[in-house]
Length: 184
Image (tube, rainbow, N blue to C red; front, side, top):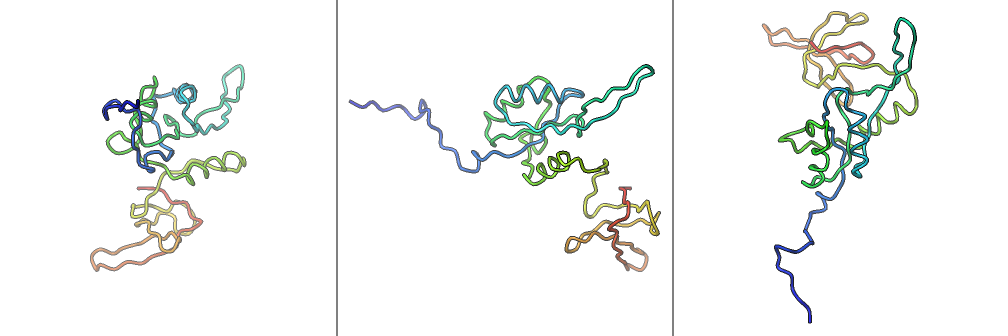
């Protein structure tokens, strides 16, 4: 004789395929807690990515190579967009929140994580750079255009600097590929 289980006691939950898909999320941590948070998340079965860079620290009596987080106060975690998975991350000591709207986190595209992973894995030369958004006011700080200011735009993958004369409402665009460009 089969017994039916009331719907409120059913252990089966209907989840949409979108919710079950795991994505990368940025987890903001307390200062200098990145490594501990990554280990604790892994202990809870969460896939993590903590990009590290080697730095030489010098003291008066010695030098030491130290592995430091590439992005201070951030660890990347691969989780599904479900409340239990979010809580599994948020309940780890040292975690402040998931980066994104309403504390739910914003998924990070796989190719962005893989680009960082590949850059570090291949030991290619790199340097930190200010994050620039298309539409942001910037200043060229190298080459023949040094000191020029304008708005960064992108057209068919080419980045250009738009210089405007507001009084006559006219603009010119110049390609800035290869120039050092900083946010104003």
